[in-house]
Length: 538
Image 1 (cartoon, rainbow, N blue to C red):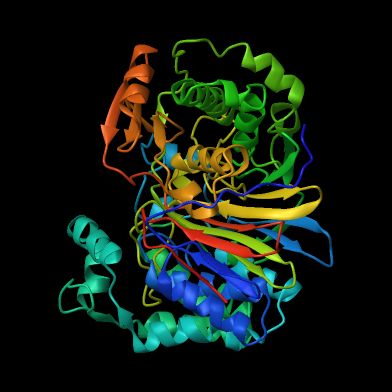
Image 2 (cartoon, rainbow, N blue to C red):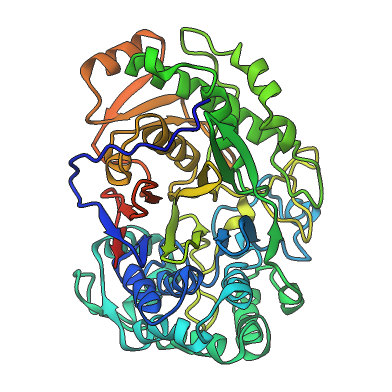
C-alpha cells in the first residue's frame, strides 16, 4: 500500500471550498458555524468551538437535535497524539423493562410519545468535552446559544417546513411553536425564554444545572405527567463515557470510527470489503455495485451484533478484521445479492459538525433527538424537545439490542477521522440515519481514492440503499440514485438486478468534511448543499 504524500485534486463545485490556517468549522447550521468561529477567534481551541456550536444547534435545529438528545464525539488533541471517542448517549430509564411495555399490550416501543424517551446524554457530553479539553470559560462557550434562545433568531426554512409538516399531528410541537411565532414565514424571530433559562442554569452550575435541581425536577415531572418512564433518579450519575475508537487500515490510511453502541463499525467493515478491489480497474457502475453489496453485508452485521458492550459482546474486532473481510468478500457476486434485512430506521434527523484549529487539534461531533422532533414531547415548561431514542431498542429478549434498564439503545450516530503517515488528514460525518454509513463510505472513497477536494467529495452524486435497520418493518428493497449519475450507471446497475430509482439531486445526507492539505498545511472545510450546513474559516 502506498505511503506517499496524499494528493488532493482541487475542482469546481457549487459551493466554494473554505480554507484557513488558524481554524475552520463546518456545522449543520450557519449560526452554529459563526458561534464556533467566534470562540476560536477569541482564543478558544477546536473543542471550545465545537461545544459552543453544539449548544447553538440545540437552539436553532429542534427538528434534529437538542438538550433532550444524545451526542457522540471523536477528539484529536495534537499534544496527546491520539484520538479519543466519547459516547454521550443516554441509557434506558430504570422502569423501562420489556415487561413494562408488554403489560401495556405493546409488541414494540412506540416511535413517538413519552414512552419512547431515553435519558438525554448530550448535555453531559458537551460538559465532559469542555471539562477535559476546554480553555474558555463555560459561560462564554454558552453565551451565543443563550442569546439566540433569549433574544431570538430568524426562522430558517428547514425548521419552518419541519414545523409545518409535523405540528398538525404533534400537539406539543404545535403548541410550543404557535405560542412563539405568528406564522411560519422564514425570517420570523423565534424567542425561547424557557430554553434560555435552562442554558443559563447549565452555564452557572454545569452538570447539576441540568441533571439536578429545579431543571431536572421540572423535566421529569413534565414527562411523568404524560405517562413517561423517566424519573429524577435516572438522571443521577454520569452518561458521557470515554472509549477507544475503532480503526482499520484502508490502502495505507488509518480510518477511525465510533465504537458501539454506535453503528460506526459497519463503515469500517464496508471499507475493508472495498479494499480488496482495484477501484482504478472498475467502471463507475462496477464500483457502485460493489459498494451496495458491501452495504448489505455490513447492515446484516449491525442487526445481528450491535449491542451495548456493557451488556453484550458486539464482536466488533472480528467484524472489522481483515480475515472477516476476506471471507465475506466472496459473497459479493457480479449481480445483486439478496437482502437479509426487512427494516428501515425511524430516525431521520440528526445534525453534525467538525472543527480543526491552527494548533493541530480536530473534533467531530454528531448530535440527535433521533426522529424529526424526537418523541415530539416538550418536557413541561422547560422548552426541551425530548428524544425518542428508546424506540430503537427491541422487545425481543433474544435480540442483540434488547431493552434493559440502564442499557443504551443502538445508535445510528457515527463519524470518522482519517490519518495518513501518522498525521491528521480528515474528519467528517453526516446526518441521515441509515444513510449515514452509506454516505460516509462514499465520501471517503471520493476523498481517499479519487483524491477529490472536500467540497467536490461532498457534492458528488450519491446512492442510498434500503432497507436498513430496525425498528420499522415492511420497507421494500430500493436502490435510489441521486440525479447526476451517468445514464450508463443507472442502466448498468439495473441490469445487475438492483431495483433502481432515480431521485432528485442532492437528496441524501447533509455531510460536513474538513481535510488538511499535507503539501502546505492549509485547512479545508466543506459543507453539503443538501442541507443548511455552512463552513467558515480564518
